[in-house]
Amino acid sequence: MTAPSKTDNTTLLAYANGCNDDDLALMTRENIDLATTPGTEMGMGLGALQARHPKETSLVYIAAFAPDKDESVSTLIADPPPGAPVPPVLPPDQGFLFLDRDKFADSFAGDLPRAQAEFMADSQVPWGVDALGGTVSQPAWRSKPSWYLIATDDRMIPPPAQHAMSERIAAQTVEVAGSHSVYVSQPDAVADLIRQVIQS
Image (cartoon, rainbow, N blue to C red):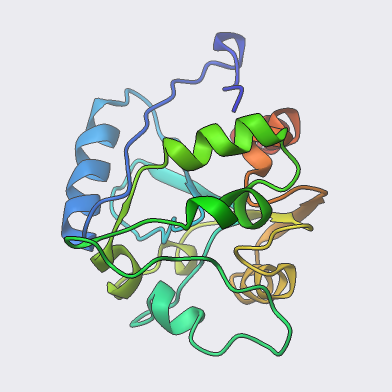
């Protein structure tokens, strides 16, 4: 993704999915402590954003899960509607989850060149099992304004589910034609939304 430029007076801080919510909360606090100004937290995919830091002023969900209190990603995907695509998640391996490499391109990156999608499949970072089953204790969207980018061709989180979550959290939404990898295939659209939030 193309980060907003320095002319937008922004600083980009990034962290990986934690294996459990305590790990993610610690990484978030440590990262935001480094920031010198209030900012926006962005989550993609498994980005179950929780209220973690007073410097967080707004939230941006990029084709992401938005659980409520006591919900987890597992509960949100437990009853997919008939005909909905099923993410090709493999059985746990030593406490971690991968997507099936042979099905990765069609499910995760259908709008990217095949070679790029295959590279992403081979270089994917695993998720901790607890990232799926960990419940949210204090959803940030209940106390902070939210924005949501709906990827209309997503085969990991069906667009109807994205619509439902974005409506539930009363997010300002934009729709972009893209796969779950919309932040790679449509980086300008993602950056434009982030810039809009920063300037709001």
